[in-house]
Image 1 (cartoon, rainbow, N blue to C red):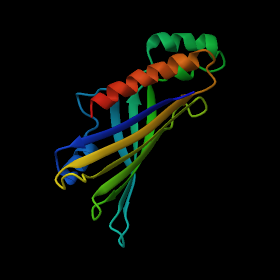
Image 2: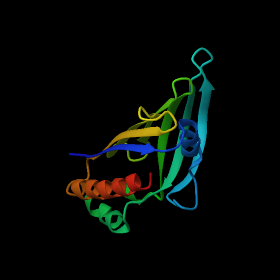
Image 3: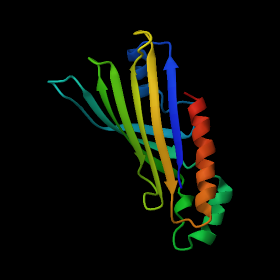
Image 4: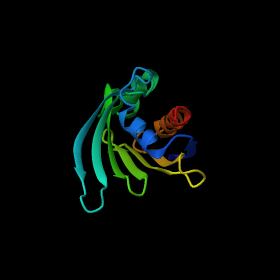
Length: 167
């Protein structure tokens, strides 16, 4: 089945300011789910000016405790939901000349049971060059958890909706 999220948001701030805020927004005391973010690769293409970054985020496991306890019944051979933290990999391509930044992220934890992928773009607004548009498409799919697949996907849907409201 799977859960999808589609977001199109406008910010009345210049592109450079919005991108700078995005790149430094985690970790912060307002969102305790993100524990750390580390740049593991960064390079600039001298011919295009595009800056590529790969970052790893360590986040608290937000799966409710009740679902973690029931994972024993469904996945007796694995206690995969009981991990304290999850890791996400984010790659970004910042193009200052065209005033856009493309971002792709996916989950590094639970890869044999779950798939989480997001693609996002920040770009100069077509309405006003001093504003910024944000477009995001994401998908989470859970497999291998039996009847818990739907329960976990429902939880993911509500968690993603909360995240969209924070933008």
